[in-house]
Length: 271
Image: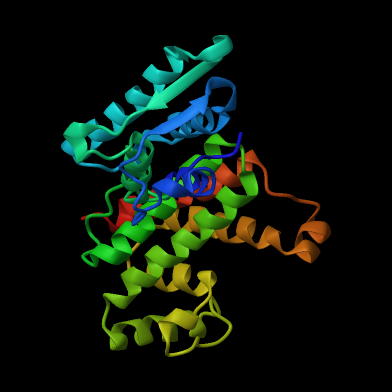
């Protein structure tokens, strides 16, 4: 089943109920319809129910408004009025206590404030990264990896975990002085761990270079380095030629191994 995100529900409301878009003058109006034409309302309810709770990022008052709005729609759909010729009808009134705005508009507005990505509960805090924007971005990636594992998306989990290891080691190396990094590179080139000195710009390095220099500088231990090397090799399976040549594909094993590398590196970098 596809993953439902808040913006998907907002887009659906804008498409089916344009009168309740933000800024519309009809947002305070009633919604009247025959019950057999209320598939749009049911779709909004069904999709909203499928949004992961970790993405419903609202304060207590706003969350209460969202729950009340959903309840108002359910109530009129469960208790339709009987019109002429026995036709079942619904009349969805604006909620006076919440600015006299229709519940459809309220749901739309509240979900438009919610992110489509957010770390799931239990995601590593990465408190050692002081840049809040980078920290949140990396935590979002960890949440995405966890969801990919849950959905059996082995290739996505493998590739993104390898990229996350790369990002974490890049950050760690950027905390070191340039002279210290250069000395470590020199040693690794002399003992042929690295075939040549990489660019002076750390952002242009490969994952192999991040791993070996980070290990030499003591940023990660050998166990973590070995796991990261596996993640590097598995991530390279995205290249068709390599995958075909080695007879390997991304699977549950490669995904779990790459995720283990992330966990090892996070543990090593956490003070």
